[in-house]
Length: 194
Image 1: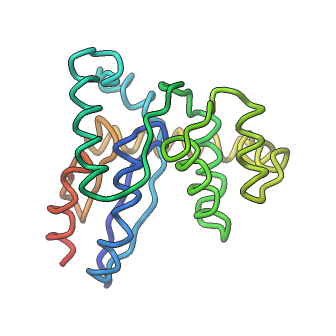
Image 2: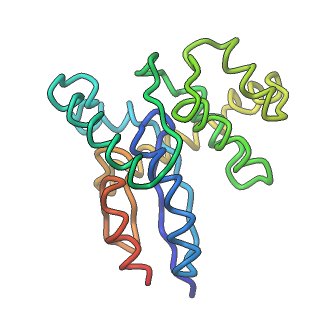
């Protein structure tokens, strides 16, 4: 049986973006597979009593500095989104709608990069449509898929499962039953997969 890492994430989390840039290299080196686990971070916060770092001024300042350190270390493109926080409900429904399809990585790349590499105001539906169209998607088709009851139910269930398993923020990783929180724990994830 091959090793797997479950990656619980929300595109509205800058730390999830950092992890997304690093995780494929880890799985390439270890021969492991990523199990993509989109969830609604707002739902996790509500269920666990946690709060976004954006709501805690001292934590927000520190997190921005820490992310800048990791961006420099990783050598990745990143710009803090001036429209943050962004309601990711529709975007995450889109992630779930395309999960397991040939278009999944193209969708996820378009959204993550529009959120954190070349920031766009993804609170604006017209801006979201432009991002999707530029990535080769028909925005009306994405809307149709994302608004299906099946997708809504799957995303709610995934969020509830995350909470049941002890997830309180994003990103969170599981290798087997062992959980790690935060993109700064990726060295532990890699060690577990090696």
